[in-house]
Image (cartoon, rainbow, N blue to C red; front, side, top):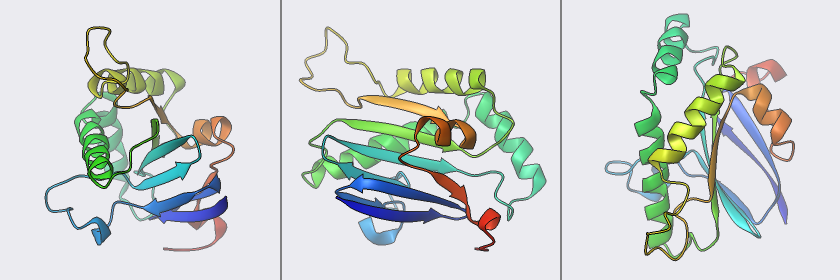
Length: 175
């Protein structure tokens, strides 16, 4: 088991006790022209983590972008993008012969103004769109995604202490 550090613009995640961890939303998979991708894929002994970061509070972002992003997020206008990022990443990993363990989809929205109620609403809507729970009438032998959750930076670091996320500019490192 290894420790990894991955960056996405102004955010950095420290991954402990993983078999592998990779930045996935880049040109390395070769299908960015036709498939969306989650930012990171982490393999642990018992599961995969598909992780997506959205950072409207990145100091490089304009203040107006933050307000527009929050309005669109709260209205569910980003749900489809998050849904397709998961689905396309799953399809890619399945076609590569991976996706052979349960997958948890974790979404970080680094926006301080989000409440627990906002995060719960977006989580529940995303669960329905993926779908998280296998229907009892479905012929599927395994779930498409085991779980998903939407966090802000504070809730992420509180609930996922083994995957701490920090802001690089707060560490004095500019991107």
